[in-house]
Image (cartoon, rainbow, N blue to C red; front, side):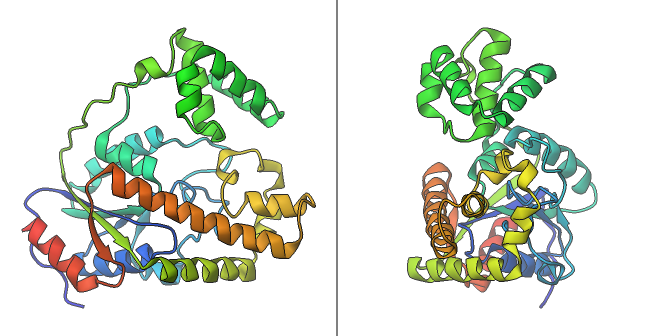
Length: 308
């Protein structure tokens, strides 16, 4: 493959999004080979060292010699938010762009991508001990009580947030408790300014093709030892990263809620539903240029025209 020899006039972040199993890793590695650049992972679960099979973390073979940043950067006991990622990425890019002009960021985590592109609301920091206390309560099975507290303190946030998402639930309540104001009152997002250019690309496949790839991926995860991976994480099952597709269904199987065949079908069904939600998010949230996942030459041409 011929390397891309034209340098970008300004530092450029190429963002490539798409649903799970669409083929982001393969396309991005090919593009990185062509552009001679690194890749940044923006997958909210691949940050965690302990989660590999269930997150479809790329193998060394799949990385094909391309350096990937932020994969395995966190421990499962840590709560790593979109805000944490946005701040860490800003620091990383300042250093990276001193020596390189282009980097690819890829993933399917809409909130994390949105934090990078559009910035975050100016939320106040909460005391560390308050968050620790709320997390302890969560681990002790008080999730419903925490939800009810938020409902009382900020009814609007209670209705608008995904209160099953432990991370967002805790964040909203800690803001209410530490400031005496509602979480909603701080949500006045201002457009983020960047010192680099952004190229936004989305990749997709026909639905039946994508769903078949999802089914095959789930089968491969199970063959590769997903149950053993989840079994080793039993002590962390209340952590936010494990309240997600592929992990929660296995815990349900371990708890005797259903048989193995039902577990497999639930993982496949819920992954397909998740992929649909991802597409809805990206299609509605920001203006991405969309391509078929196999249209490598078209993506190259689009990037060339944008960079030049």
